[in-house]
Each structure stands twice: as C-alpha cells, then as structure tokens.
Image (tube, rainbow, N blue to C red; front, side):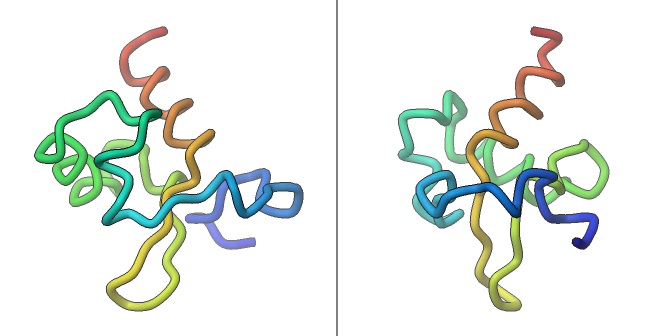
Length: 77
C-alpha cells in the first residue's frame, strides 16, 4: 500500500470514491471550488495527500471518508 492510499483501501467500497473533477459539487464537500483546488494543489504539504488516489497522471479520485476526516482534523473538530 502506498503512502497516498487511504488506510482503509482494502475494505473501501467504490461508492466511497468520487472523481476529483466532480467532487466540488458533492454534498460531502463544504468547500468552494477554489478552496478545494487549493487543498488539492497543496495536498503534499497540508495532510490531504492520503485523501486522493491517483488513477492516471492527470486523473484522481477522492476518498470521501478520508477527505472528511482530514477536513475535520484541519478544522479542529
């Protein structure tokens, strides 16, 4: 398992993933599109790298439970 994969990859269902380019409109994403894009671009420095799974060189999936947990940790919830 690589560092960028969520810890629960082995037990995760496909429904827990959303394409990155569609996640800005997802109901579990409370961020504006620009805020989400900033988090993605800085994912290696802000702790969100584990919420993204690289599919191809330009295509990523968002692991929704991991993203929500990262967001809660960042906001101190």
